Image (cartoon, rainbow, N blue to C red; front, side):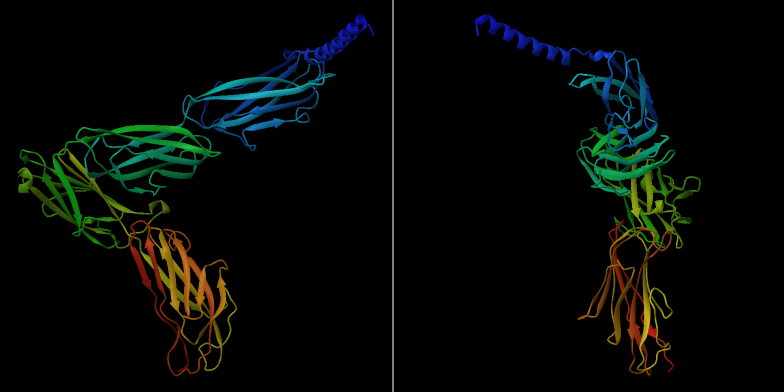
Length: 540
């Protein structure tokens, strides 16, 4: 083969390669026109629709089209995931020259005002008689111009260093869509000591609401102590958002500052001679309010106003010998003409006023939203203010009852009891809590020697344990929610026992006293209740 032939063969090979390359690459992607039509602005929670419109402007059939539509973070999509794919069958097959089609996608957006939400669509296809697939991509942007949610951080403008105070996170939704997995978080400034919150939160910084419906509102009340230098500014930052795929989507944020004031008076309060008294229904509360002059000059002509809050208070029982009770705003007023320490108080000197008020004996919660009740006193002495919160303990109840009829189990045998004859009976234990959750709740008893535990319990999943050696029967209840036995069902368990008396000439104890114990989760107060002994009836 001569040199000329070799050159011809090389050019032939290169020509074939170029032809194949040109055949695969010469298709213009602009032949497929694709666009997204949608709203340029939208409100949070509003249902919006995107229309993907595509048209074959070429002369070649576009085969096996596939479309991918990507929603941004914060999109609520009915389908699983934020990336939606449509196959050739979903798109009605190949796209012929001149043919135009549309496909729709709907969503709702979560995010803060002015958030930019960009959707993206990718259409891939294979031009007829070409081996490679091509892709065409386009995007569309929507801006969140409205977040119909009210969210505020209500903090006082100033507080004295080292004094307890309260503030609130208020929220409500006007979104025409139920918001799920809402979270409220707060960032405290340096020098803040958390005391308690209503409701309780996670690690005292996060409060979760499973669902927030349209027109629904709520609040979180937090109490704490702030320390710092006089006139120092402390910043609180509260955020409201939604958890989505493990990410926190911010909806609203509120930032407020509070100034450490130069105190002129130091105000303290005692109830029933205690600085941290835990109240109970039916209590009479003896309030003592102490005030000390922190200035270097005398304090004169002071007025004290104490405003009381709490639906459990019996306002008709107020006794304030030196004060004046104002029924309109539930406040008690002390004026300087009646109390010498209010007329004139030397630097470092302390004065005191006092009053008495009862907590209603028959007070009951109306709804479960009333759990963890408190009594609040707001004290104002001229420009000095202080707020105190007194927790109310729950009341608990435990009972044991026996049933001879078939209740939960089949019972048999004589009753009144007869000597040497076996009688089966059912025991039902119930536990209740009025105002607060009770944790670590346990109910236990020791069975009499002549009583047999039949190892039948209801419901089957209840944690009831019998120790054959000690004959102790223990019901590990766990948590009893506030309102159990009042606004919701009591905690209940049942079990079957039997007895074969050897004589009926004396009292027969079927059950000794059962002891209920637990811890009030709101007040951390230990609770104990003991039931009565249950005797079996005989013919003696």
